[in-house]
Image (tube, rainbow, N blue to C red; front, side):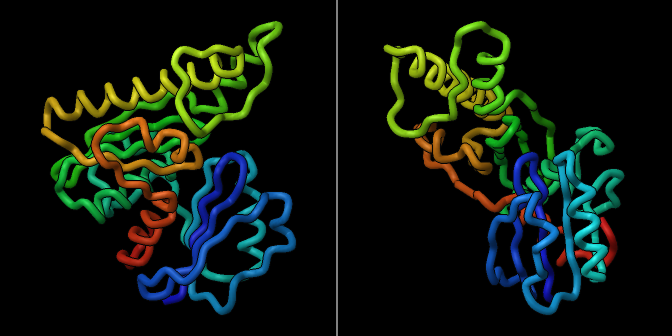
Length: 241
């Protein structure tokens, strides 16, 4: 089966072309360019999810293609994800991330951290999602400081070396946010380790490069984890999620 996978985020769309569990190609498309987007070759199915406000644009595009579709959204049918979380409230992006982690790590304890518009941290063990946290992401925190104060500038997230303490306003804001987020992540991992020693740590999301050096132990970077989880859900199950 040749399947196009679509991950509609808050700012842009990621996609991947998969055939019989083989990853063929992937890319990005802007929401404003959807009306010009053509499906990459002959497709048997489109699998998609969207957490952004412009989901109708994806829906209209797929309708125009006239290709069978599977949309991942709650309520979810029984599938790869067993969870103690209220699945009616679990967003499709987190559901897909957790499905991707469980399909790869099986019963091993793992903390998966998604660094996107929001920072989400989830813990899986024994093949089951144990729950997680949601807090503001890097850009959201910087934007909030600019929006709710009179003179703090609007800054973009920074990568590169970590400054401590900050010696300029930009450093104080960017590295203050980065150190704060890192402390949250390390505390979450430490709490998980109290229950299951030495869990693996997986990072995904657009801000991952800014935090890869925050951990002393090796971490696993999975930038396409949402799409990998979506593939595991759709390609390994005959029924709609």
